Image (cartoon, rainbow, N blue to C red; front, side, top):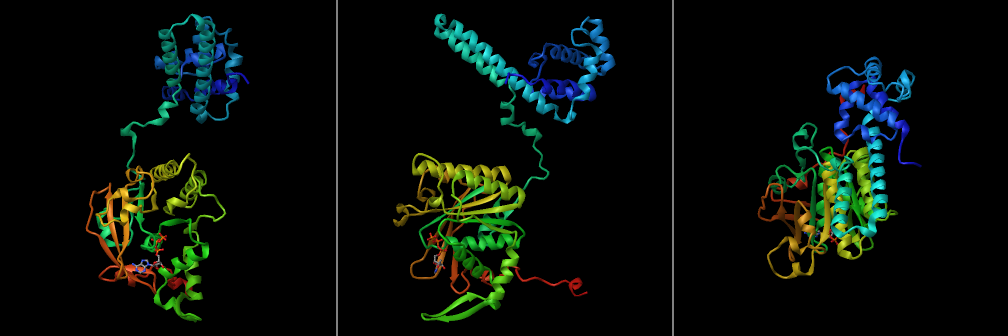
Length: 436
Ligand SMILES: Nc1ncnc2c1ncn2[C@@H]1O[C@H](COP(=O)(O)OP(=O)(O)OP(=O)(O)O)[C@@H](O)[C@H]1O
């Protein structure tokens, strides 16, 4: 295939003839007459531009008359060709797309020509000439307009439809210090020693988000579907749906079948769980997160935990950085709340003050996070303390949040016990109309 696209060139000219305002799109991609491959297209465009610059109408009559005056009408194929190009276009709305294609080919032709010229002269070129050549090549590439897709003019950013605010965790101290919940577009790291209560704490955050109307996603690298669901349901269930059962080892508490059914109904199309068949690499995770964010309006993503992700990268640290960067970018791009669990390293076991660098793994991880939380369990009491180690959004680092643990309900609660009494709202409320 040659480095040109005739139909795209005709489409540009035809679109301008149908809607002259379309010519202004050329400014967006530095488009000019020399970008056309077909010489007669370059001539037609030059005359269109001339009319536009003189604030004159661009239509088949004015264009024909200008070309005729300049003795160019026959050269461009006459009136027959001008009228033919308006009939082949699908829609003038695609002009920008076609300008980009035609521009891209023009740049490639320029590079090809420069390279073949250079190859002819390479034996006699000195280093200064070679540097100049590579500079010229770079400036040709910058001219493609592709670089312009990589930044935006700050004044064009609209505040409307932007997701401001965040998702409340349901724990007052955390919600107050984060300015009303974990902000959209942020990545949180939850660290802590094994068994310190991270998954339990996250189950409550997931349940709270769903009760507030946010859809959620959970990846657990360690638990089976059944364990994940059983724990989640136990955290969510109200006392009337918790039954006491007996087995050979004694009594235990479980969610009743009724309760389980109601919770299953409540989370339908709201809570999504990563398939245990899927490899947890950055490609699969990115695809799943993008799909759920766009198609299912999922806002909260919980990934438990970093060590079980299988991202690419030459060593364990590079793999982690790739994973964390991918998650951070997705959080920003789709205004999501992403929470990633990462274990603590050995230094956290020493009796020292907590700090962000006790996250196990690459030291860049806390720098990428917007919030860092640490869960630590008290040895002789059923209490887990949550410390905010980093809070990029409001900067508030309050005293630790002491959470008591209720084993029957698998819930943490604070002094006033409101978290323990909390009804997440999974039981349907009947409306008057239901009985008619
Ligand atoms: N403060 C606490 N007091 C008593 N039991 C607790 C406390 N926190 C959690 N548990 C219990 O300890 C077990 C481990 O809790 P959980 O899975 O939430 O911890 P984790 O930090 O996620 O662990 P891991 O790092 O192994 O995933 C669970 O059975 C949970 O019910």
